[in-house]
Length: 294
Image (cartoon, rainbow, N blue to C red; front, side, top):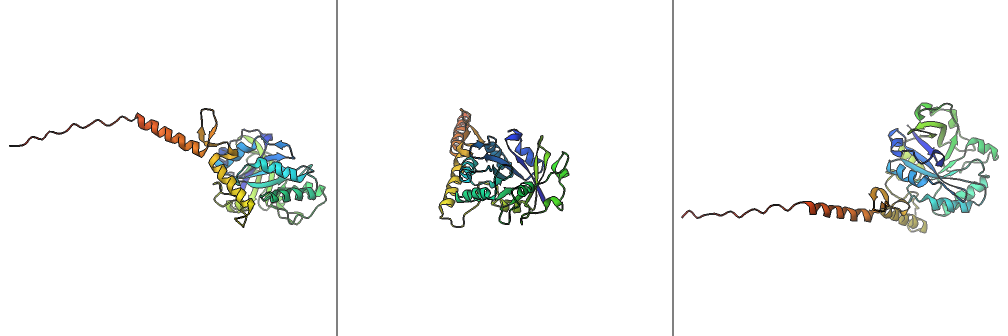
């Protein structure tokens, strides 16, 4: 089976409806999180939360720039804010430097407690930096575009297309085959994955029943600081919402702020009390007088 997904960023603006994306048959979304050490994509938090709520598998990517991979890893993870519910992806292309810079970033992310699952490295950039060995590269994503525009399924060149050919000793895991797919009223990059949802969740380091708030990329030793940090972050996210700013689906307070779980329970109790107060008391039943028959 083949699954389709989209790749988006601030370049498409904030208006893509993730429920519509899911309704049109897409299974996953890759969204830009950050670039270099200073750019944070403002569309990421809302797209992340909306895509997860729509039942889509999600990965957030960092556009790697040449230089200081450790600082870039810290910037990326600070803005990721996903509570372990999304795949970790690096965009390695024009201006990203060489393989040393790439591995510096990957190792820095891994050292900070997350695992890089996907690597967008198009063949043309691989050629440009000297055709390095890619046998250890996590989750190769290759781009090769068909012509035309339209629905993704009609543009897809097929599972047997030469566009799927690997390079550098790595197999292509995901193919970005167009930048002009019509999805939810927008022209976007579209990707294909040859496999099931379970297979894709495994590639992204996510649980099979994702989304559901479960921590991804679990560390085998449950006592390690990295694993404990992920668990604490997940609990905090579940209680206080994505980015600790409340859950959109729980409603808002008088200030327009999203409610946390505790706030929502308190509001529900207040609403129930108000409704109970409006229910009139049942009329009293007069006592029945029984006369003796003698």
